[in-house]
Image (cartoon, rainbow, N blue to C red; front, side):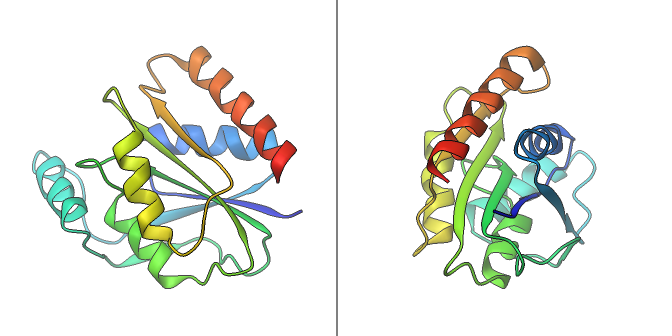
Length: 158
């Protein structure tokens, strides 16, 4: 089975998780780049607002999903939702006939609301499994163990 891990990462947290997942599953990665400048002090506010309003943005993706059987999509959490870049990636691609899994990274305490919002964005597709990683770069050992366990779950059910 060919696996693609697609992700957007503004600060490097989600990239860290995506690369660990790809390494564990022998998958390829696809970085989704937001063409809108999301740097600076106001990025947190404007990005959160765009996420809350379910806005789309201009993106560039390093790969297409066409030749992959399982697509794993990762996003940081902004205002309890996925980023505009990942929402756009989902809108621009056809996932029917493909298996999917999703993950989010966040600094907060509970990823559940973000995962619910993520699942709504990929409807009618249903993810095989989902993962929320909290403060991944602050506690690398714990995060890596969560990632390894999740990858084992994907191998079992995928």
